Structure formats: structure tokens, C-alpha cells
Image (tube, rainbow over all chains, first blue to last red; front, side):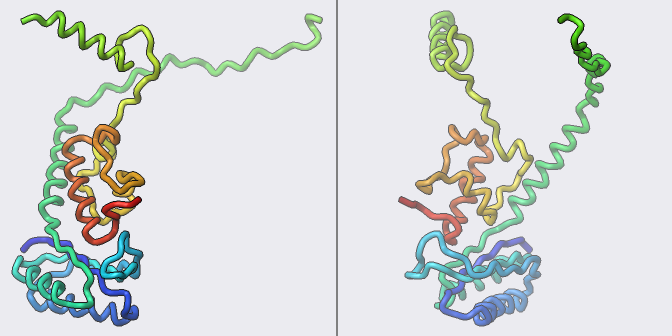
Length: 140
Length: 96
């Protein structure tokens, strides 16, 4: 099982509900194939950074799934064929996350190995001196 | 093997740059620090549009390392993150 990030851009010609239905379709394909859905987020209707098929907006739907590669490939294939999905992206997420976790632990170990830093010498305590009171009328 | 002239030219170049040495410093160059190292962000998330946007100038190109100060490792990760975000239209390929 591998962790994947999958994003689908659903055409803005549909209503909110229909877009949800399209997302539900892929959710079904994934879960039927034995994928475990970790995250399931609707980002909603967003403006595209550039037009895709003359469309300036799209419904974004994001899945994070733990699945076998074959199921993800199948989902991608269907997204590619679908007219409702303008664009999709499926990438592995576990490699990067694993690496990040490893780096974090290594850093922690390194910090632990380093002898504890002696407490920074405090600057000599200077009693807060009140400014000398200005005596009025003495000099003049 | 003659380190002396090389060292000489280098120090001259350095002073001209205003980095180190030199009698006249025109400006003190602020040391650039990799944002990801400083904040201990190991994972560059391609979904984080706000973060990526900070590495994309007007034109839509990827900000070079020499300007942003990002370390080599994180620049590579940033690069893939930006390219992924571009492919699903979160970020433009180019603007004018």
C-alpha cells in the first residue's frame, strides 16, 4: 500500500451537487478497489490560474488514499476519459513524508547528542536606576 | 602553486562586492537564510498555494536560489512542488 495524493478538477458547468456526485463516483472506485481513504476534501469552486478548455473556474476535489498502484492507475484512467474532469493529478505522498519524518528524527537525535549548552551568562545585573531626579530651581 | 596572487584577486573582488574587507562598504549584504531550513519545514507541500506564491514573482517564473536564498535541497523540492501546483492550475505557468 502506498500513500497517494489525488486531485481532480471538475468542470464548472455542473452544479455543486453534481460536482459532488462526480467526486463520489471516484470515491467509490477507490474504496471498491480496496483503497483506504485518509483525507477527503472538497476545496470548492476555485478560479484557475489559466483557462483550461476555455473554462476559468473549476471544482477541486482532493483525496489522500492509501492504495495499491493498480487502483490509482485505474482511477487516473477513468479521470482521463471523463469529460467532467478537466484535469487531474495523482502523485505519491509517502516518499516525501517518510523523508521528512526521517530528517526530523535525525535532527532531534543530533540535538540530543550535542552536550547541553551551558546557561548563557546573564549580563551583570544592573539595578534599574531611576534617572537622577532633576532638581528644579537649584542652579538657577 | 602560487596561492598569493589568487588570494589577492579574490580579496580585491570581495572588497569590490562590498561583502568582506575593503575600505569602503557601500551596503551590508544581509545574509540570506533558507526559509524551509529556518522554519524546519522538511516537506514542501504543493497544495500550499500561499507558500509557493511567495517564490513566484510577477512573471510567474520560479524565483532563483541566488535571490531567495533557499538551500539546494529545498530549492529542488520547491521546484517539484511548484510544477505540480502548476499542472492543476493552482499557479500560473506564465503571466504578462
